[in-house]
Length: 203
Ligand code: GRF
Image (cartoon, rainbow, N blue to C red):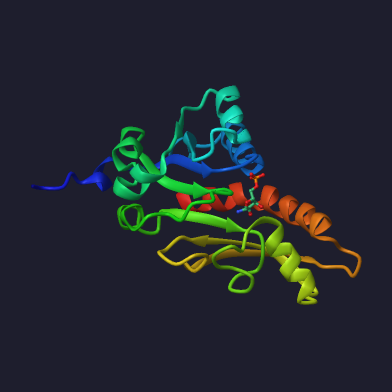
């Protein structure tokens, strides 16, 4: 049987955000692209779909408030077919991970080569990998006595936090920083930079 060619259906400017939690990055990205009506048509992108694996996640409320379709995914199906046909229905051309807690299946990575990006709350290749998320990352950075931390935006491949690095932004780690205070600095960097890097990738 011939496999449908999903790439033909992809539209570069149709973004799907995959998130599992509060969705503050998702909100910033939505705001960024809805507040840019002056952009030329070829540069205008939109968040066409929110994909979430957690029915209690705040990001689902954001989707509802913003009138953006959302897709609550189920583990078995995700690892069987990557929800490819659902993504195709929305002509998704770029997948943006923003606090998405499941590993992306190989099927999806192959269909979206260099079209899946992630944001990590530390300076990769340091402090990445399985179980390195949220406060675990900031705790490890402080414990290691690092003088600086930051964010990494990178392409997603089959290995956790491993794909090609697109962008770094740094902040200082002060002696009295706690995982909580460091998380706040990192969140501010994420909110400042993620949307404009996405725009650069699209255009
Ligand atoms: C961010 O810190 C991101 O780096 C990490 O998960 C967090 C998501 O935060 N991958 P939010 O849900 O966007 O507020």
